[in-house]
Length: 122
Image 1 (tube, rainbow, N blue to C red):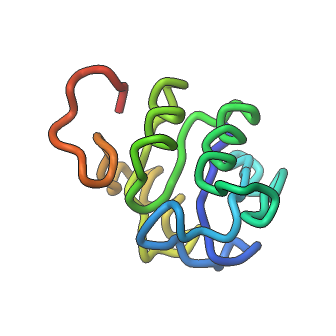
Image 2: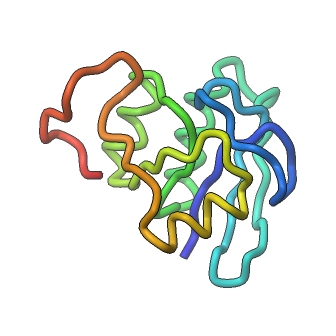
């Protein structure tokens, strides 16, 4: 299974930021092998959070572990049927472990948004 994790640094020990748009890197990880397959840097795009959202779909990730997501990247990710998990403050490794044990909350709406309107999958 492939997932994406928004981080401050390029390692599995990096911390997941409070907000998706604060991430400096997006790690694409094969969690069966616990291997980083690809690293996307924020400085690759004018709007990094949108670029990250597009890369999550491009790399066919099943889930993203991150902090609060603004509306535009949220819609891109949610419309791509990618599950969104709240992992802010965790290391990449601890976030993956928590996800595997069903200990992470779903991100059901964009930052500042109201309740889930049923348009997006968890």
